[in-house]
Length: 98
Length: 98
DNA sequence: AATCATACCTAGTGGCACTAGGTATCACAA
DNA sequence: TTGTGATACCTAGTGCCACTAGGTATGATT
Image (cartoon, rainbow over all chains, first blue to last red; front, side):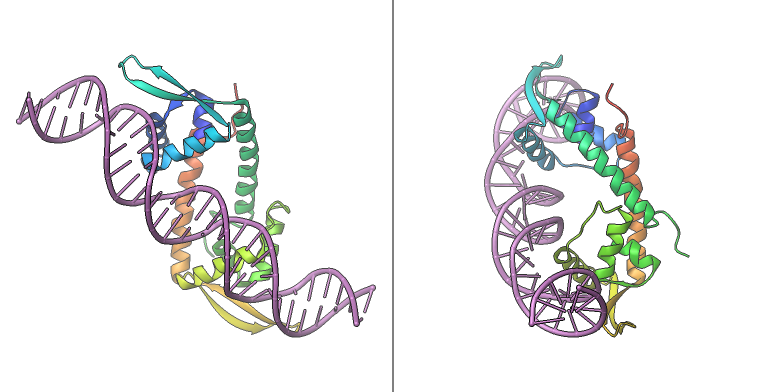
């Protein structure tokens, strides 16, 4: 999800959480304590990279950018996702119990 | 996935693995070491229940049956799944990088 | 008799999801 | 001016669980 968000545009932790919350119709309320370790892990794997930037508000924000490796990883995961979807669909997901 | 399989019909460990393998076009190769602990956990949560049965082959097999609670849990998870799908779709999953 | 497929199982490890904190700045109200 | 809420970053600790790597046993095939 983070990689998807960063493919749209560079973003920062707090905003990523808001975005997920909004896109899930308030169904997913990711805590910050969850997010930042994930971001750092993604950075370590060189799927994303960080840079500091001062917003118009005057606040420092740590923006993240998708790297080339990140883009490749995202494609790999989209492929995997299709397998998951296809498999669950084959197993009758969504169909009512007869 | 296990609950989905058991909604179709009662099944046993070894067969469940084969089924997942087949339904995923050989993309998912679940090990038995993975499966059995999960089955036991589901049983403990009373989402499934086990019974021994002798197959025509003469072998003892431990069949699992979906319980009422299991059926309810499966519906809950299908709901969750729709949220996940919708959210990822909203975030542009599947769309090519522009 | 050996090997393969079937059929069940447990122990151990490492990673990670999640909770529960902490720090700091800015805006705004009491 | 202090206190509250939103913004914005972070770490430590716990406990579960995904996964690997084993083990046992039977029936069928070679």
